[in-house]
View 1 (cartoon, one colour):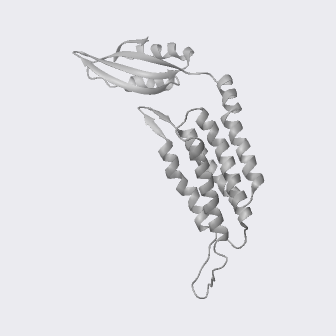
View 2 (cartoon, helix red, strand yellow):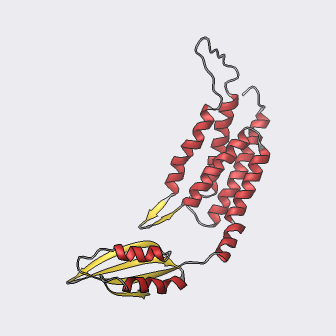
View 3 (tube, rainbow, N blue to C red):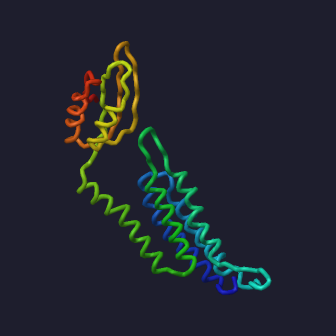
Length: 224
């Protein structure tokens, strides 16, 4: 890379590794799937791709008249879309619940941090890293204290034979509950539905009230 010295290349890669690793360390301390090494590698890879895209072609001869076109942003632009495949791998769906969205987002933003470090935009890279760490740490703690906390609970609903779980899902949705799993069991002229949900304690009573107002529901109760 004629426009960059070895020292400058090493500095940019080191900054990308350090900033990406700082975000990854927070994820690893929370025992997430993508931790320190994964975030560090994403940041370093994005930084190198960006440097290759911006500086590696200066010795090449380009001529529009001869059909030799040069776009220095082409390789770097693929990082934005390409990181989505890695982020998608961090997202796990378990029944009705989805996990890993925050980790996928951190991988995406770490790639941006690596790109900023790759072009020498250190102020943007450092500022973004600070914002991300604050969002993951102190802001997360603050949101859990200010916003209502949901608790896991188990709902047992007895329906008439042939009835669907639509009324159960509707009642839970109207109460703001998050369904984690749903199981059915037919027993003669009855059908039992067992739902594992995350719900605010004050909303649990309204779920029962809504369900008992449905003619298809024979009984509903919260169990341990």
